[in-house]
Amino acid sequence: MIRPPRNPFRPGVGLQPEYLAGRDAPIAQFRRVLEGTPDIPGNARITGLRGVGKTVLLKRLQEVAEEMGFATIATELEPRHCDEVTFHALLTRQATELAKRLSTMERVRQAAAEAVNALRRMATVTFEGFEWSLAGDLDRATHDVAALLLEVTEAALKAEKRGLVLFFDEAQVLVDDKSATGSHPLSSLIAAVSTLQKQGVPISLVLCGLPTLAVNLLSARTYSERMFRGFKVDSLGFEDASKAFTEPLASAGTITADPDLVTRVVSDVEGYPYFIQLWGAELWDAANDAGTPQINVAVLDAIEDRIHERLDLDFYEPRVESLTPAEQDLLLASAQCTYPPLAVAELNDASTKSNDNVNVLLGRLVKANVLYRPRKGQYLYTAPKFREYLQRRTEQA
Image (cartoon, rainbow, N blue to C red; front, side):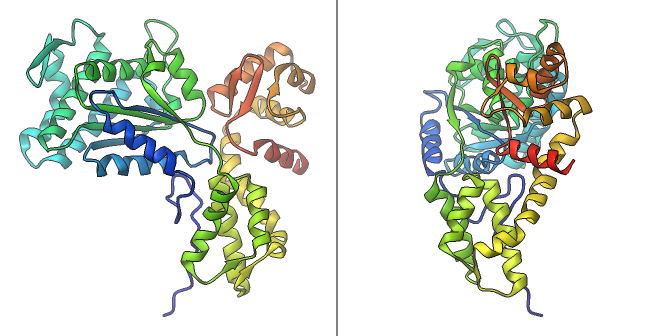
């Protein structure tokens, strides 16, 4: 049986594209960050809007770390992990799985799982002949995280790895409670890693998330602004975006794109990698169904409504439908305002809600990671081209 040609585009969450365009510079910079460890702690903070390819880049950086000889733990965080107990349980599970991968010895396989209970009672810990206090310097939650990470790092070294690199995606969900008695998972993680790094333990931390991640780090009870090398992932320039569209077509070898179409697509999607994959997938299917060997602007004109319908259903609506009616109403009102940024004063005029209610709803939308606040009185959407989606939604309503 003859199989139909395979669509070379891969729109989706964190799916590796056929051709990774425009990320050579951050990959090279990340290599340099890891090369300096442990003498210079190698931590990275990766931020960007939704759809810019953060998760794809993060997976590539994990591959780089493993190519350089490091053991890695990679986890996508969820809102439920914003609790010290739940977060520690997650770390314990990941550490145990890594220990099993690193060694077939029963003693090492069980070490990470038993690390919390065993090391919780210890006043001091030892690494490469040097002994220092964890219990005396750290609170209980941070001590437990540090003890666990030290144990799994030692397991990595026993397996002849250079050290351990932790990768956390969607890290913006880690938010410390404002009260002193609440959960502080972000501060505990950062303080634990920092404590180990000060003792020369070869461990690195990579946090990836929306722009609110940078704000959360500054609000944490640590000196985190001095710990991380910042990487801002943005949309692709014209040349890189064009390659992201044309290289998959070239590798497939059955359908080509008219140059005018390439220019039009790159302009329409504003260089955002997820949109390039989505536009490409729909255009490929349309050309393949029609049996034409070349995609041109006429094909795009014919299916543009279908592309926007899929974009809205797959990318935007899942984030909006989880919001309350009042939050959705404020978002729809924001589409009437000038942008960027959203000015609170103008939003107050556009909305039928009271100014106090608008402020409360804005705070809830920030917490839901739909908006973020770059400065006081101004807000930005966390998803690109979100305003155009809200305008389409308003027209449909």
